[in-house]
Image 1: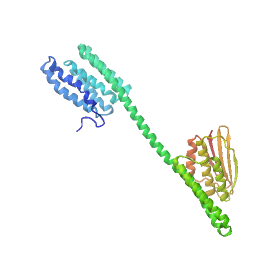
Image 2: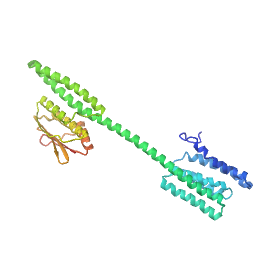
Image 3: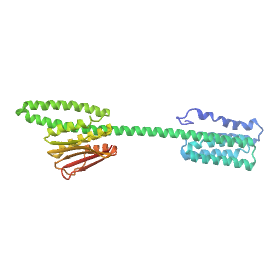
Image 4: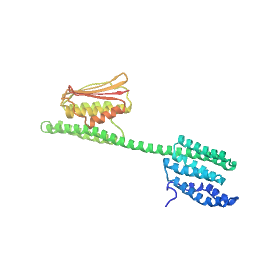
Length: 351
């Protein structure tokens, strides 16, 4: 059985020295038998309230505060050292309330002690300590408890931020790996199929395609490592080059109008990844013969368009398009998709 919660040190035991002063007062100075007799149970009740207060939380601590104030009111007329009970009551206010409310209750304790002193005409050496030390100790503990709560909230917020950052990083890695591997594997499949068809009729071209498959596989491995480490793509220019190579392998003619504006690394990374995913979708699903790429700046917006003359439609967004939308919207941008005549993908980000 513990008197104090395990997270507390020995400091609360030190403050019991003031209760010793109350318990010894009737034997150090002249007092009636009744005053001496009541001191023992009052001391035991005060001890029980004191240790109980450290186990309570929130408004339940009011029971302890009220018990100490009641002891002070009942015993200070016969024992001036009972002023310590008002101090103990005030010391638990910070634990029970936020500062604004705690100071209101502290004012109430001071008002009760002051009113009793005035009504009963108590000697100054009994009510002055009750008022002065209740005010000082109460205010000090209120501020300490408030700072402790703020520290705990900051630590909790920091833990939550770190958790959210870990979740966001896992999602980012998942989106990037989906885009990287989806694009690269599509190219590898296309080139492998082409090499297989050319193996008999044009062995030299087939060997070239296989060498490109090897090169693409090595590049993909490096890109996967970069994605895991937090880096995205090699930039717009590289992605346009890769898009042209991919589309040509799939037998799709590319028409490009690229005027790359000044972009931040984050903006360029998002647009590059979006271009990669869009081209991958054209190769996989569009059944197109022409793909048009456009990158222009219009006022304060940079606009990327990827359009094809394929089958279009309004298919449900997959993981790739969903991840693309999340990246774009994180930059304050907009992603629009129109499948009425082929497929048009328009991405706008502020610059």
